[in-house]
Amino acid sequence: MNIDFSFKTVLVTGASGGIGREVAIMFSRCGARVIVHYNTRKEEADKTLSLLSPGEHFCARADLSDSMQVEAFSEMVTAAAGHIDFLVNNAGLHEELDIMSCTYAQWLTSMEKTFALNLMGAANLSFCIGRRMAAADGGKIINISSRGAFRGEPGAPSYGASKAGLNAMGQSLAKAFAAAGVFVYTVAPGFVETDMASGVLNSERGDEIRSQSPLGRVAKPEEVARAVVLLASDGTEFMTGCILDVNGASYLRT
Image 1 (cartoon, rainbow, N blue to C red):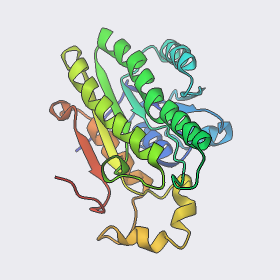
Image 2: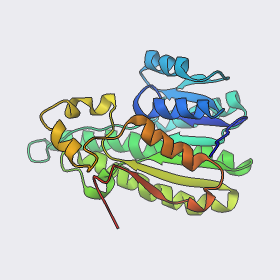
Image 3: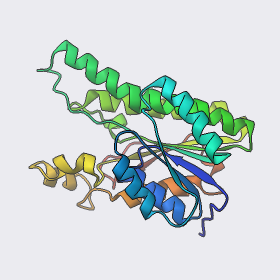
Image 4: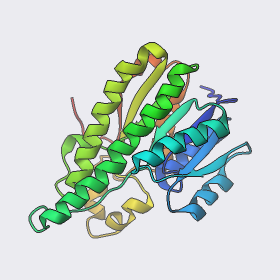
């Protein structure tokens, strides 16, 4: 299948590395113009930009956990691009927390900080960009979730809960936006070879984590990116509202 995104624009959040970088690269190879979002990692965002296939790509900064910045950011990137056809909500935070030893203040901080980015950041950006898509020629929103939304994350409860909320939000928006030609999907990976996961994958837990999949490994970022690009391609409209597992059969649900 030949996927051609010529004359299309994609906004990829958290594109300064990991899954976001690979998503940006793959969209550019399919002809799309890419908006590389970042917050604090400007040098890494510039590196992502340098890895893209030739095109009118650009970087744009915002702290998506700040609702006021989200609105201004949406206006800025839309004005700069003219239109946005695809939004990939990839920016996220994973924070370990031991519920049996942390303080209540630590609990509150972890919950508030994680939800502000993982759920509210994606929700607010989907509102701002999705409404613009609905008023134009439609578009597609693809959220990056996690298998942790289904299996539970006892060592990172704020992460698991925020991703479960992201799943529900995506399905609600799929229903709300469908009549306007805006389609919403979710990709739920397991562990992926990224900087965020490198610490645990290189620790004594690494072999156990890799053994969770019958393939004996974790996903490569480009494998998740392929799933995102597939959902963005033509002919997937009737898949709106779906949650696509990309976890190497490490967690199976019915």
